[in-house]
Amino acid sequence: MRDHPPSPLRQRFCLLAVTLLMLSGAGCRERASAVAAPAADTRQTLLDREADAFFSGPVKTFEVTLGSNSLASLRQDPRKAVPATVRIGSNVFDSVSVHVKGSAGSTRSVDDNPALTLNFGKYKEGQTAFGLHKLHLNNSVQDPSRMSELVASTLYRRSGIPTARATQGLMLLNGRDLGLYVVKEGYDKAFVRRNFPEDPQAEGNLYDGGFVRDIDQDLTREVGHGTNDFADLRQLRNAINEGPATRLAALERILDVDHFLSYCAWQSINDDWDGYPRNRNNYRLYRDPVHNRFRFIPHGMDQLYANPGQALEPGWAGVVAQRFFELPGTRDAFLDRITRLSTNYFTPGAITNLLDTATARLTNALAARSEPERQEILGHVRGLRARLLERAAQIPVQMELRPRPVHFDEHGEMTLGGWVPRPDTGNGMAEIVALPTGGRAFHLLARSEATVAGFRAPIRLPAGDYVLSARFKTSRLKPYTDSRGSGAGVRIGGGSRTNALAGTQDWTPVRFPLHLEESRDLEWVVEIRANAGEAWVEMNSLKLQRLKSR
Image (cartoon, rainbow, N blue to C red):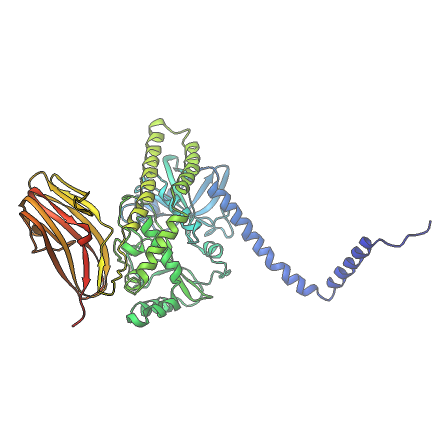
C-alpha cells in the first residue's frame, strides 16, 4: 500500500518532537535545574492550600495529651516547651512541642484553661499539621465571642495587610474538656514566605514586639538570617529622631509608609486600643530584605470593637506613630485612608456576609455542646455583630464632622458651618429656627437650673490670631456660672470665656479672641449656661476673622 504525504498537523507534531529531543540532549543540565525550583515551590503551594482549607473548613477538635513528665515540667516552667501527642480529628501527631503562652490578662496555668503554642516540626523535622508548622490555641478569655480575631484578621488580609489567619477549635487537654478556643497560625518562616514572596528564603528579620515594648528596645527576632545586631532597628530609631524637615524622607527609606498608614487606619477602625499605635503592644515588625523597609503586622486582636463610638484619633503611644503623625499632611492622609478602607471593606454588607459565614461554621461546631454554652457564645457573637454594625455606621458620621482646613476670603473672613446641637446638661434645648426678619438662628432654651445647651463646630486652624464674632439676642436669661463661663456667649471647646449676656437684650455682638502658637484642631462653641430663659444666635453672623500678623 502506498504511503500518503504527512498532513500539515502531523508535520508540526514531528517538528515539535525533534525539538524536544534536541533540548533533552545539550540542554539537559539547564532543564534539570529549572525543574528543581518548581518542585520546592509546588510543595509550599500544596502546604498553603492545605492551610487555606483548614482555616476555611469546619471547626476541628484538638486533643492534646501530655505525659506526666511534660505536665510536671509545665507546672514548674510554663514557657519551657515539652513533647506532647496531638490528635486533630482523625489525624494524630506525635512529638509535638507544646508550651503555655499568653501575657497579662490571658495567662492561665496548665491545670486551668491555658493558651498553648504547638510546634509540629520542632522535635520532628518536616512534620506539619494541615500545612502548618506552628499553631496557637488561644483561650480567648478576653473575647467571649471567640470571633474578633477572625473578623479583624480577615479584614486586614482582604486589604493587603499580612497577619495570621484564625479560626476556632474545640479543646481537650489530657481529657479535660476546655471548650471553644481560637486557633491561629504562628509567625514563622512559612508565614514570611507566604506573605512576603519577595523574601522566598525568609531571610528578612521578623521581630516580636513582646509585652508593651517599643522599637527603642532590642526586640526578639523570630525569623531572620545573619547577625542579630539590631542594625535595622537602629535605622528606624534614627529615622524617627530626625527633625521635621527630613524625617519623612528618612522614614520612607526604612518604613513602608503607605502600609503604615493602612495599618494605623485599621487599628482606628477596629478600635484596637491594645495594638502598637495606641499601646506599643501586640505587634510583629518585619523588614523586607529586598527593599529594606519595615512593615508592622497586627497581632493579639481579642479586645476589639468594644466602643462603636470611639474617636478615630484616640492618640498615639507608639513612638513611630507619634513621630510620623507630627509631620504635615500625615493626619489628612490618615483620615483619607480610613475613608478608603471603611468604604471598601468595613461596610454593613461586608461585615454581615463575613459574620454569617463564620457564625454558620461556629453553630455547626457547637451543635453537640450544651444548650447554655451554645446560647452564651452565640449571644456574644450577636453582641459583636451589633457593635460592628454600629461602628460601621459611626465612622462616616465622625468623618463628616472632622475638622476641615479653613479658607478665608480676601478680607480675611470665613463663615462657619458644620454646627451640631449639644444640649449638654440640665433640661435644655438646642434647635435651628427661622427668624421673622429672614435668615435662621440657633435657639437655645433653659428649662431647668444649671442647664448647658449650645451648638459646636469642629475646625482646624493654623498658628495665628483670630476673632470669632456672633450676634446674640436673649430673653429673661438667668445666668448659671461655672468654670467655663456664664449666661450666653461663645468660646472654644475645653476653654472658658469672659463674654456673658444675661437678662433680655436685643441683638448684641459678641467677640471671642484666640491666639494659637501652633496648628490645632478645636471646636467653636456657642452656648447658654443658664438657670432659665432663652437666647438666639444669628447664624449668618457667625464669622471667623484671621488678624494680620503684626
